[in-house]
Image (cartoon, rainbow, N blue to C red; front, side, top):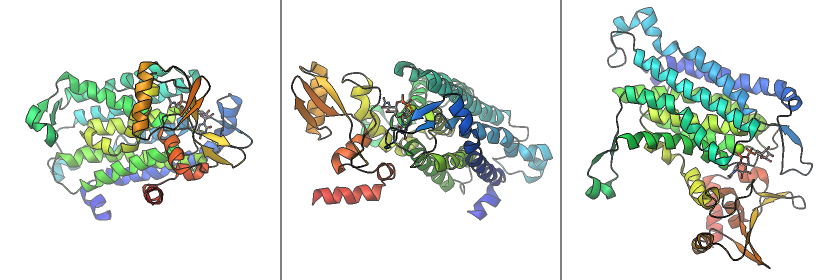
Length: 403
Ligand code: UD1
Ligand code: MG
């Protein structure tokens, strides 16, 4: 890695420096600002503890602010060779163009503008508790700057068709304006899918850290190529490394037992970071591979999100004070069910994704979220265990279940 860092580009070293600086600053200043958030009544109740303590909410805004400062200060680094005249001496085609690459600077600034708008809108959501239908709109608005930049930049709207569908659409398909709709929807999906897989200590930051490190690892694999892909993956790393830094700084305070909540601000900030790097890095399809649990959670949640089945304000697991463990939370549905609810429940029963209890005029079913499903399949769990349940642990549990 050291060889790659030193030979390909210096700004990467600067980015790592900003990542470390941003992470330690976030870690240090969060405890200093806790009191101010409590005084301003930016608080939430930790639902899964015996005493239900009140914790400062929306602390993700601190991580996001530190992140923005780091990236603002980082702006000159990728262009340093142009300031020093080094680009003429080194002639490192295709990395160095003869004149200053205003398009690259524009790309960087549009990404920052989208992120900054998303952080502002996310904080507004935390303060005003915006309705779900508007929540879906916020990331679309924030993605406009990167979409315009994409349009004036490559503007590429062709996609390579997956092999099984090639006999219908051919090898390459031009989506035209639909491609922009798709990219806007990526921003909506990335932000909201992180926000709805939430409600237990550390799970918002935990999943974001896993996704960010996976994308960064994928980017590193492209660094020894010698074409334009190096540039796009470097661009992605410049945004992800400081993100990983501030996320770790925040996670130390949000992991079980949490001392702060991250808020919707953090979920939107994290999701938008992933959308920005994938859109401008041209790997939005690859990004979906790193979102498999969130895609499952989103599809599973869809009947409740789109109100086909009742959706309570909070769907996070329930805390059982006698066992100190989490159990799956439920929703009561009045009988007779509407035809659509009935189809959904039948389908989920067939797929073994739901547990139904009949009570007088009502039926009681688990809320349709991945966290509740894990508790349904593997039984009550401690909050920390549920947040850190890893694929190997899941595999072991599945193997136990199969025996
Ligand atoms: C989304 C989910 C909601 C879930 C909530 C949890 C959907 C449609 N919405 O709503 O079901 O209950 O996230 O964040 O799926 N909290 C804890 N412990 C934690 C984290 C949060 O008790 O570790 C509680 C706190 O009271 C906190 C509140 O959840 O104040 C935050 O909820 P908020 O982020 O405002 O909910 P939504 O994002 O609207
Ligand atoms: Mg939330």
